[in-house]
Length: 212
Length: 212
DNA sequence: CTTGTAAACGGAGGGCGCCTCCATATTTGC
DNA sequence: GCAAATATGGAGGCGCCCTCCGTTTACAAG
Image (cartoon, rainbow over all chains, first blue to last red; front, side):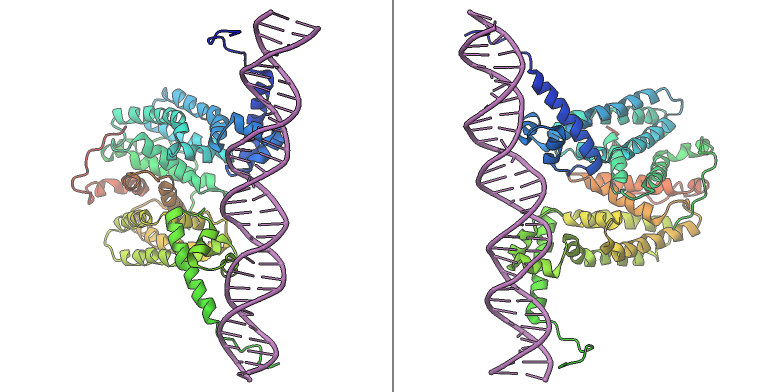
């Protein structure tokens, strides 16, 4: 043997470069065309062969996950920051609304989150867990303060959020979801606490929007 | 001319028969395999050529719509009945929860509704409108009674509902969505009315389910 | 620098599903 | 019956998925 088993070869430079290229291309293609975009288009854009793409990311989901892992990171970090917010319920609301805004900028992101939350794929377990922890912390704080009901889990909240975003490709969906999040968070409040929080901080001049 | 333009030929018997067969097959295949099931599989199951299928239903969505139109009808009828319910908010809640139950039995149904609500296709306009009317009526009644906020539209509610169902393929999703619907409806209530309704009818022994 | 070898490359190819098109078969009205 | 109208079904072109493998390339030992 020329070198012992524990010797690890340095990864080849071209491999590293190509992996990066594919990720870059995938981010662009997925963001524009959604999760069903052609992988061959990704390969072409990255300037690599389709075989190369598949070696680095054996399944479509592998690629997806790699692309959006970092994005999710941002969301968890935001949750961390919001823990210092005085009003726990408000912190939760803010986080949820930030998610909506964030998602709005990345068409493919929503699909990624959906896969995460749907949980049909093992690969997303880690990402899923991080998100659950993020909401969970905010949720727990609000529950501990006695501000919201305690029979709703972090999973429930996450799914509700993603779900509410899921069907919106049309213009104006963002406002709609913002309102829905608002309703949802209000619904979470425990009854007895409602009155004391009745005059909670609200958007100053919420335009009176009539139903239908 | 052998016959004037206004004479309408009776539709051919075989065409009628085949159309029916295709619908039958499609219902089965879509219910089992979801909206992405192979149309060729549908044709095969129906015992017709793929060409025949495409002539009767030029697009995948045409077929979808035909299959699920009647199902949606049931939901609108239920809404009609619920209008006689004493408590408008309770009626709304009931309808939403019935939708969940209904959806649970048809895997393809959810996708159909999603397409409806998403509105990306013109074809669903009619179905969509009927559903909007159904929720709209229940919603309007509750608003008129001053029981819920008036800045949420029927579309909003419908999307929230479908969205909350959308991500749930896993066991137990139904309970989760039921809880979410509950939260959502609570969130719709207007603040000032909350207290007078604080002891509204509730599931007697709601099992204390701790978050996370 | 040379050279052996593990690692990476890329694209041809088999498969599958979508949808169109049209030669053939069936039904209807007269 | 017969002709015209209508329906049929599957072959074929296309695009995408993913695998497989002959060729190329980068690394590191000498």
